[in-house]
Image 1 (cartoon, rainbow, N blue to C red):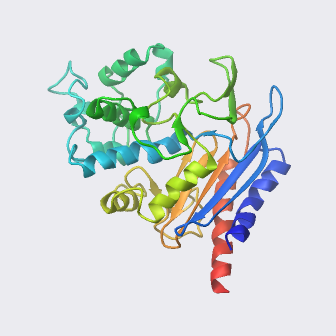
Image 2: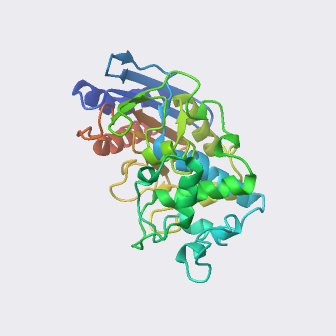
Image 3: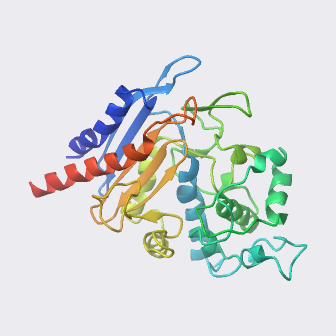
Length: 341
């Protein structure tokens, strides 16, 4: 059954590959009992010279870092009683906006506010244009008076959570435990190429695509994690079978808090990336480079679609926003057909 699922789910990606819309794609499917199947096709790199994509290639997971790493680390600290999610970030970062202790709104933001993206912080900011010293850029993030706006999905939320983890543990994010096949960059094996970066003047391969993540040292709360398809699937299975987090942490990942957002993740909503066929409580997250992970707890199946859709440029129509839901719908359609017998 698992092989048939993978064939069905990979068919949309094969069509996009044939049309030249994406260079390469890897699909992985895993069930709660450990069955898995992987499909790989296309190129890890188009330019300057072609390189075939393999199962062992490492992908820049981009914002999937937020859920596999940062969310997991924060919820583990909450499990251990080292933080209260409803307490302000200043419990971990007392110097946040330290020159306006009485009035700075940033000092009232809680861990939970940042996890569920219900802050006033902007979606993104070109932090890398303010310098290239990681410590100085962290200080800039902490002392900047951020412009206010309505709640949006914000990288800044998770940059702050990453700094909080560093402060609470006294170590960088790369010192936190990760499963095999997951690593902060540069990865310990062949990497998939991402963009020809106008700022860095080269095709990126094995270094963090996100400009802010790169400038801040390559290990930040919002980006910087690399993974192989099997590393991502191992993590997904650990959520399905409950071995990768406490029951309280998994419940927090699954329960909506702010609209369709849970702690770190999204649940299924109209028009979302995982398609409309999955169970209502399915959680998922995507990454800018063309990555994604979805976990359907009710059916006991998870899948990851890893592409290098930004290679060699983000300024092209890769079709990723239709490919992702098509993949999820094809997989769940095949699952339900098999279950119906």
